[in-house]
Picture 1 (cartoon, helix red, strand yellow):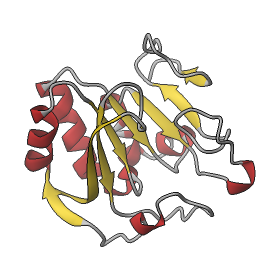
Picture 2 (cartoon, rainbow, N blue to C red):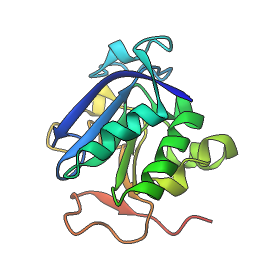
Picture 3 (cartoon, rainbow, N blue to C red):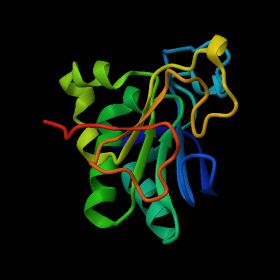
Picture 4 (cartoon, one colour):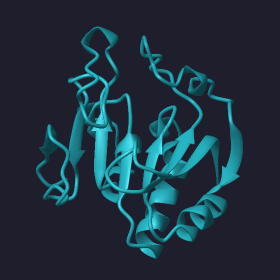
Length: 168
């Protein structure tokens, strides 16, 4: 199973707390005005990489947790779900995922929701240029929420995070 990947950033600290391996995928139909990564919109962009290949890259860095961004990983939900499942089975890494969908939209679609049990944190919602706030940590506008899907926030929880009730 392949994921269309634009870039992989190693030991980044801009995509969640601590060191992270960030997988930037291709494909996004949200087309948020003022998007910081419009080159990611092309659904056929990037290059295909297998889940196995990505998992080996992730496992090779013992210091870094994982971030899914893009583009929007939920447009490649089957492959990202498989990658997230394998990360959880084969490592102790946390997974943060950015999406232009809201949590409520994802929960209303069983196909999209299948990735949620493998994620630790979801940063949801479209970027709204008119609400841009450069003081926010890990998000561009205040409508975007940092949602902890695994109960309690991490010890180094980011200000403005939203602990969420347990998933059904």
